[in-house]
Length: 316
Image (cartoon, rainbow, N blue to C red; front, side, top):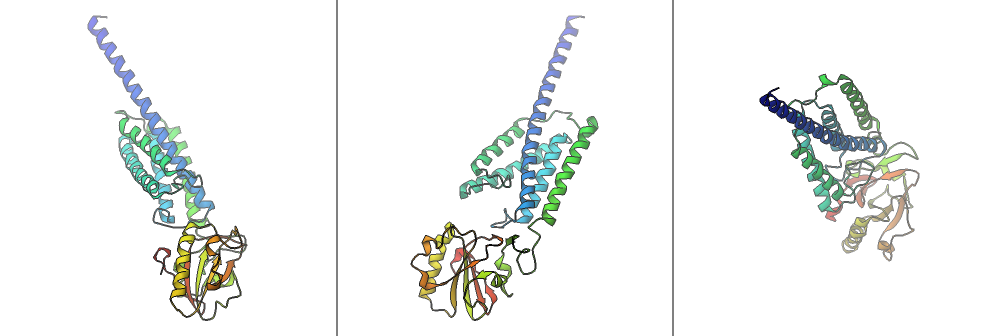
């Protein structure tokens, strides 16, 4: 073999090793990113299947959560398959930019958990750093010129397809058959022992469904009443309810005022209500159900009909 041939052979060997290294690096980055997305989607799916969703904002709404699960599943499947790697890399980068922005927003808002991993509470700052790391890897590491495709590994493609289809079916079941869809027409769920999602803003113009589950001696079906739902350990309740009580004393309105405690009950009377007992009547929801509601909630009744449900932050 001549010197020229040995030089060409050596150069070809180096290029092959470099391409093999690039391929191995991309496989590691793409599979790791796929695992992160798959785990997040799986945990969200389980959370949707097992726990009622309370929509405090658009990000926590049921439609957003189910859509996020499907999107994360699709991108994780595409990353793990190696199919159309360059286009999938762009889609994955776009998805992690969105996740990064959401994590940053929740970090600035001071949320205790980002909600990205369903029932597993993770500090938004930790999620933000994770998203930045994954995004940086996807930006720096490029797929090889000829990435793996389904045709190179049909068994792997079949296995990934079956796994993705199984989890996708689980998420569909969660959105169609989970506790978030088992709601009766009166706004309550099931029988004693069931999970109950309260959405008072949808009761306007209807008979208040809570009348039959509030334990009180107040005649709520007669006359005008303002019903306030609260949790004993709710920080927002501690800030807003005293304001509402002062407004009730300063403005002479027809009707009564009743504060209804939502289980679980942590104490007979929360500290922020001490000394104000003469301003309102008391009641509580039956503790035989698991109640889910964002408190405080103000519900205005007229002869048992809900006439208004103003948002808590207005103090109206």
